[in-house]
Image (cartoon, rainbow, N blue to C red; front, side, top):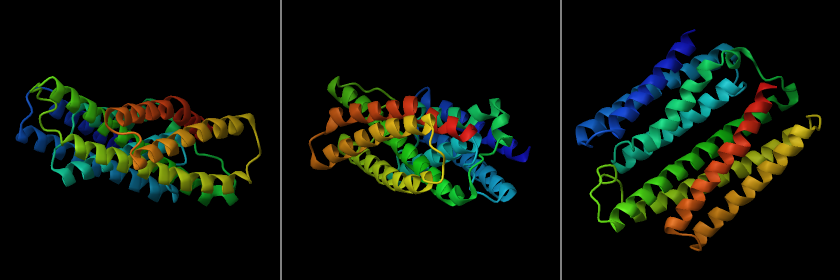
Length: 267
């Protein structure tokens, strides 16, 4: 019950941060208060995962509930770190909406709290490492999509010579493009290692249609991910083109791959 209360608190604070930063005229005071709300929520979120770790003596990614919460936690951690490093405050709806949704969604499914993954003992450590790395990859990919959305919004504002309040406090196009590439690289590197670890643990798991489908979809997404980072690193894909491809990649992962990961965790 304590874990659920902490998660609920974190989700509410993330939503409050989104509302505070994403609506009305942007001011330094609003950005500071939005950052503070998100930081308090992140502290509650961290405490919940730490309690779950203490209760189960396992990294909290063994159920769909835990996996979603871990992804949301990493995403918020990245957002807070980037916001603090660039001194730009939170990006409102761009950043905290997915965090609030991911954090609160599992509370509607109590079975996620008690349904533990039934993995063979030989694969437990490999599966945990694979899950953590995959969560880091997805979170970095989400961050790349967020920076991409900021880039497109900022470019449109500059092109139209608009003084839109939602884009006035954003970093320069060069900075946003740099962070797009950095997050794509982080995502690709984490997923590359996750694929290797997953391949090692897969030898202990009986083959099945669900695994074959996961490998096929995951392989296609990873190939797209690697190719996009290569294009970004070589300069072949830049600016708005890179931003649009990054958002497309995240959408494909969100629609195709993440539901497969969650379904396999439930089983």
